[in-house]
Image 1 (spheres, rainbow, N blue to C red):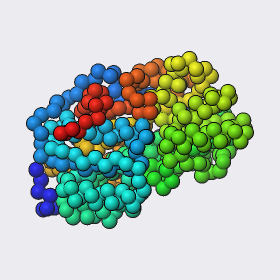
Image 2 (cartoon, rainbow, N blue to C red):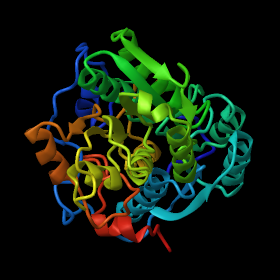
Image 3 (cartoon, one colour):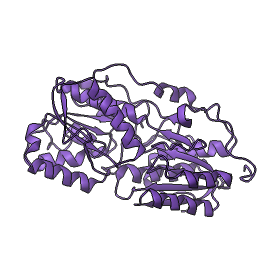
Image 4 (cartoon, helix red, strand yellow):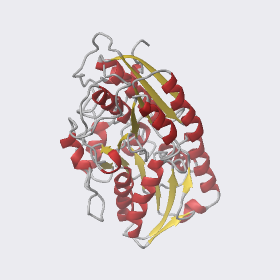
Length: 389
């Protein structure tokens, strides 16, 4: 094991999966809806084998901070992928998994608790791009590697590993605006105010909006925040429908709280309008009309893998083992470029059927692992057990 007291993070140069990540480093120039591409980074089947098997327990200790994750399918699955990756690596002795609903100051305290637990690396989903920096400095001074997942922080020594959230929003919004013929009103629902991923998605949404001046955003250009909470999303949707405003829109953009909005529309007996969501199983199955209850629903699911948790643990172990990592701007490594699958084209419907995984929780993303960046099986992820558990 690397001596934690001797040095801060090494210079970052070459990541084993750099060739895969390079594809995500540019935003498509197209201003129309993306083509429906083959899902190159999601599991082909529930029985996909792991390339790595658990071996004798290693000596590393992993710390994990996952705030505002209780009840959110993405965050719950993210935790399970991190535990599964730690388990199959054979290099992790134990994990300290902090998974609770808190604010940025609470997460700052959580990271300091992980430092006190004498972990070797901290993998965390940040609630704020700057608020955690004092604790991150303390961690690095103790020789602890710090890896932000799903969203970026400004701390220069933390490696940021995430989906391209700007492109994520841009792809879905571009498809939606094309479906609307470039005109009409869109209900814009977002995530957690101030969260780096929410800020990036807002940038991508507004990039597509600038290319479609005939689109009007309601209730305002800043949208409404669901806090990525299913109950909040449901209440907002019910209130919006009850206000009568739903009858005056032609499209909906959601930030991953999608099936709840669809069910609220269905429950109110309203006709569906085109909708953008994430690749959560419940939404994927609504688009496929698996139950037969969603006739007339059109939409697109955009790839956003919770498996970034497992990929973050694998990256932490590479750094601990002295491997070097190629990063881009702001010390960032991007996952493969987000793909999008609609239920309008035959190709899109075929891809939605291919990526659907009926055995996982309805609120979990169907992209439960990332080829080349995680090593566990579906069964190991669903077990949600880390080393020693």
